[in-house]
Length: 209
Ligand code: PRP
Ligand code: URA
View (tube, rainbow, N blue to C red):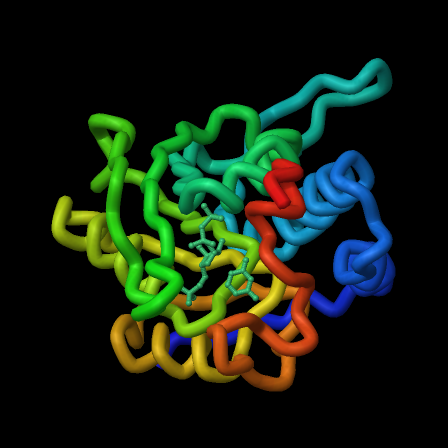
């Protein structure tokens, strides 16, 4: 069974509260999501292997540690996943970015795929699927399906807020995937929105409502 990591650093929790606030306007919402994505990237890269290299300081020669040439890929689920990409690239600028376009049918809540563009060497990369919201889990599961069908095996999922239903659904469908979240909320409402959540992440990021 995949593990669930709750990124409960005080800075993340502080910013998440203002992200949730309905009075937070688009510009601030976008900046806060970006900042939390950077902070969460610290957690999600915690297990990246290091290797030793020799380094000459002005005083002596010593051994230093550097990241061991890992090939990373960020896979935002459109639209809302886009809001977290730059924040992660701040820490991992060499990562390639692939896009998976999915929207949730408002009636059935089922994900509808409309766009996929991935790095050509995607199956060799360690991938982080990014989406602020893990509600029913349908979108995350569909995105992970897309990647696994292309031969990808090293995949993590990173979300701001998850519903318990979404976590359960991903664990059932993809028991090999670790999930990183800033919070697990109470439940879903009748429209499939996370309660208390933050509302519609895509609309709040892009000002479309
Ligand atoms: C939202 C969100 C997730 C999905 C989560 O996207 O960004 O992708 O819903 O719900 P689920 O876990 O029940 O699938 P939405 O479909 O609203 O599209 P958007 O990002 O383009 O606004
Ligand atoms: N998608 C969102 O943007 N918000 C939710 O609460 C659920 C799905």
